[in-house]
Image 1: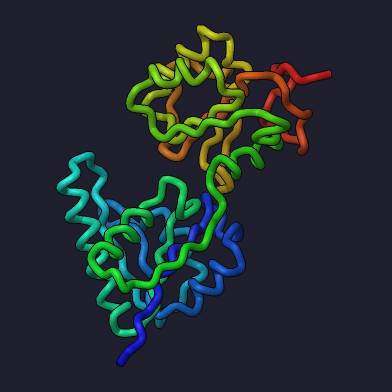
Image 2: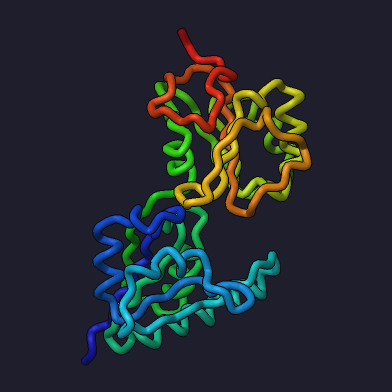
Length: 258
């Protein structure tokens, strides 16, 4: 009887291929098959681009299609199709590595793939390998700690209800807004009303050559932002001084403790 292969979900980080863990790199290089979210319009997806230098020509490539829609029926069908593709190799005793940008437990497609695979094949073996998520990469790019002491951190995905941000700003110390580009005009207005623009920072394409870091006070509501942009709001001023020299940020605009 053939032993079932293992599905490894690996976080490949925010963009810089050198930010893979040693374990992730080893699995990428030695797994018979590598799966990843397929790109759009025939172009390679983001995770696929990150892992390009780690894969070998002999490996099987499995681009899996995950539609960018909210229709639950369409999503479920896509997850089941992807799980079926992966199981075809696992059932033959071949390991499969699924590469996900960032970390596999942090707003990751891998979660849905793994849950669906277990629902269809309860004997499936799955292992998650953590990676670096974008808020941590963004903090490093700024040269600032993300949190200190007893600060309360809130991370919000793409905002569909901006009113939620208003209530969170009343009690959180640090707020991270993921993929903020689609709602930046509304977020900007909320931050401006609360005088928080000087304490808010935009990080575009964290860890990549085109990375940009700047204060939200330097922008207007219609500021064009790329899809991979996030915003970090330091609601309170209980922060340490910069831990790295980062000329791209005007630190003087921040209310640092004396």
